[in-house]
Image: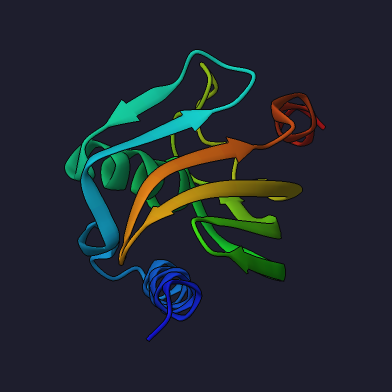
Amino acid sequence: MTMLEIARATITGYLETLVDRGPHARYFAEDVSLQLMGTDQEAHGPEAVEATIRYLHEQAFDAHPELKRVLVDGERAAIEADFVGRHVGDFAGKHATGKDVRVPYSVLYDVEGDRIKALRIYMPMDALLHQLDE
């Protein structure tokens, strides 16, 4: 397999596992990092990165990504998606509201071999918080 094919298989497998709420940390490098851009939120290491993603998708929200586009170019990948779900737990100082949310977001990935080395999540937090206040 070429590096592009390996990266594509890695991202595809990761996204399928994420949507299925499976053990997606297996796709992460030992020194993986996650940044929620525009905030001070970061996580480092496979367990912490997976826990952060699970918090957003399973604890603060019962949510899933609705993928629109997936791009893979060797050691870089990107998705465009909507974060869709219901606010079911504490988030940004707000207790569960039960409100439905839909927010567009993108993630840029650094891929090294068959592992994800970095995730940079671009999500408009103001739009998300606004939906919780409505």
